[in-house]
Image (cartoon, rainbow, N blue to C red; front, side):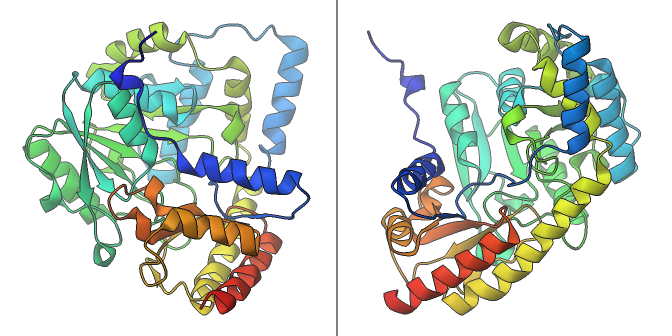
Length: 380
């Protein structure tokens, strides 16, 4: 039986690293996880309690395709709280994780063969989802001096869309209001649809992240309960679409997914109110970031763009290797620290970069930095 050309996508390398780390742990080794962007904390206590109560009370069957009305209203309230935006809840689409939101957005906005621009380095699944939908990803090589974010002048001609992430994965850098406005304005002038990936909003350490909705309503904004809300495995996200696009997205969601997981929606609604617990988690990440910015250069990883948000640091290791995948495997084997090769995020220059995640406990970060320093001392 033949396989379609659309089905031939690249692997998600960080998942391969996770498997290698799991195998090492199964063999009895203690591995420090700096490879995966997953909070070590569970879903907020209030979210878990709300679901436990609902499971005793309700059948938890299908919901409407766009999500529970009270959850959509709650998410709209989050925009009022975080950004001062008066958002109509009807524009909020609850999805089965941000991955489903990207599928819906790309399907609603683009036709087969369209070109869609994205910054490199960037989240690898953008490229692979686009390819699987018979769309053509067009990489924009970003620069360290621009903190790995695209500029308005970088938008290529002939593209139908532009995906921007702030805070970004893998760099953790953010776009300020002026930079985001310039990108949205340049895209609009070219007739380019703008998709803003905001799944790391809430995880900032100095100035807060700016939402594309503070600039324009003619954008798609994608977010998730995975990161700030510490609910990765619950697979629940959302997007905000222009009013004229609601029915198109609703029809797609009905047919592709029927509805988001009911149980996860109930937990997510309660999570919106768990502010104290979530802010305590962010305090841990802030301390981890401080330790990483201090410890990585001491260990020998000196070429980094200091992150504004998320829980990643992207390091140029061109002075150490031209094979980041082999280098990451060596670090795992000799230091017991799992890190992600940059090839996941930049297929052209990623052989000379690594991504470090500081989403784990502070004790793990301290131990991981000590191991990295010891490894680099022997490596050099």
